[in-house]
Image (cartoon, rainbow, N blue to C red; front, side, top):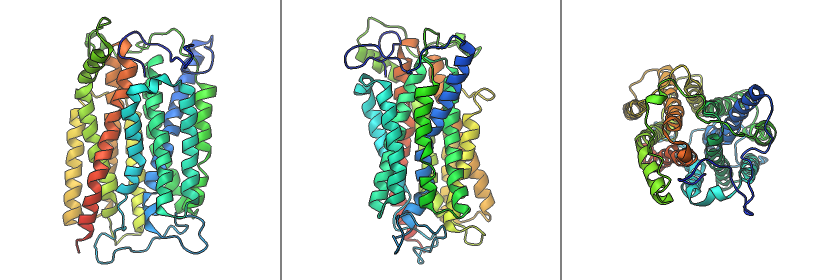
Length: 430
């Protein structure tokens, strides 16, 4: 991430020589470069979030079963689960799926909190390479693990990959036209849909969770290819070249204070971001409290879907909503993201009451609510970063984008911490 003061720059390596954010030389054909960068950032968003989404989709399988004789993996080869807590009306696992959420998000939170302190000193290429290696390691470790503990270590690797990648690629967007932010966001939404749908589809087709995870090893390779082979050097271009028509009337979050100390400039930038950061924290807190705290407890016994299948469908429908809204920026920009936070909190309250009272008669009503939940979450994400890019002055944009991406991770982490005791409390109900 760039410093808070000074003009946007390329990252420098340890010897002080300039290195391009993207390793390829600039193309003569600017239109071709535009499309390559747009596709490149879409694929980076897709690949970066893929392992994170798959681990959440596999959370119920990771925690549901003990290793049986002849099974090479802790992840159960039989997609049909058995009841774990017959005394509870919720059919609870011994450990909440929020445990997988925490393993999948806390390393990301640590990376994002530490990133402003010195991650910008490391060139982009080693960061991307590390992210790809960790993603591949996560699939291998979870697929071949023999215990929940080892599986959770694999989930941690997925978290490191996703967190390092997100802070890297969002910072990288500061060197490109603003259109790549929409491409990146759409790609991350695509990761949610493709990750959840591929895990659901392959397991529903009879493939074991272990072999399903191994079939996804091509995604980290695609991540590396997208960065090293597809992106072009940004070159001398105006990152504000594709502003909305009303952008000129908007004031930057802070003034151009080149004479101010860097620390004060950082603080002023952060303060200007708070009216976007706080709603995004609330949105992600509410939706992941639903996803990892309530999904497992929204269990309908009188349906054709097993408990594990219901959980996978919930994850897939949520990600479908996220993908649709993260791809909707051009047709439906939203300025006041606090409205999305309010609606998401109402979603959480409604579903929490349903878990307690079980008053909804059909799983299809839950399906509709979950799609709506995903639409709100995706819209909050893409509009938050789009608005920040529009309102932050050029010399602070790289820092602002990297700092704001802490918001979703913080909200998710808080939701996981609260979902664990809630799971234990509700599972004691008969």
